[in-house]
Image (cartoon, rainbow, N blue to C red; front, side, top):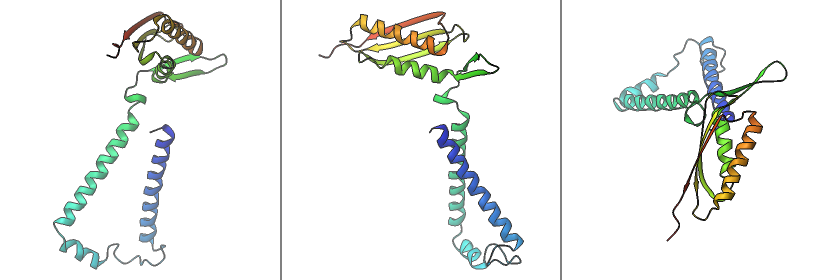
Length: 186
């Protein structure tokens, strides 16, 4: 889910909780039309039905509570987890004016992977960044198709690394590229 989707989901949950709390407060203060502040919130008929369906009503309430708790735990875990499941740090560069530009390392590696897989000869790519931001170490692994021309793929990888260095203003201190060629079709 995107960041905008998460913000929308949390906004909806917050609005529902605020609306529920406001309705309960209005009912208890007697400002809710059609509700007597001296009356019980749950009618005697509803309480009798609850007691008649026991233990199933209690079991249904426990299952609903457990499902809500699991959904909340899943949502909270997704929020606390960084992009792509792990948080690998950020690239932080000073600007020309006061301030800094910070970009998550996962975004940079994903962009380089997309650039590398733009060549039809590259089936898959994996990128790992380590080290300090001005001169990080870049580890690249590419899986090539059997008919990929090695010289063309080599030039494509070097061009992608040059674009990465120009975009991030980080010249790799160490560049390690591993290419694996998939076996040809029988």
